[in-house]
Amino acid sequence: QLQLVESGGDSVQPGGSLRLSCAASGSSLSAYRITWFRQAPGKEREGVSCLTSNGKGANYAGSVKGRFTVYRDNAQSTVYLQMDSLKSEDTAVYYCAAKSTRNVVYCPLAGDMDVWGEGTLVTVSS
Image (tube, rainbow, N blue to C red; front, side, top):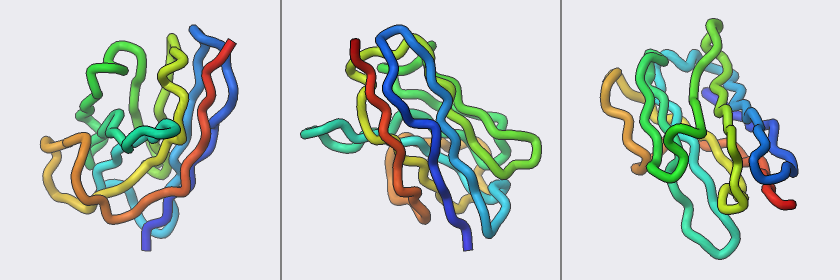
């Protein structure tokens, strides 16, 4: 059974960068699309980025497009979220989640997910 563990969260200053990791175990990621979500204090959870099951397609929320990049390593066991030009509004707990799918094109930023990680905290503050 697939399990996900996030890491890489930290405190950084505005304009800084972080790379979050979503390590998978128990199953290959090739059968799952991975979505990164975040939830800021007092706000609803929102989808940030999605990576297709073949690792070749990505989708981004407008608020992070051009600043965040999602990709998967060659062994297909870890998905990364590279976050650059961080802003205070990026402060949140970030979660990765997996959805089993054979569709290598459809990659929404919402919807029911099959597996969730426990989250990692990102704080952007001066």
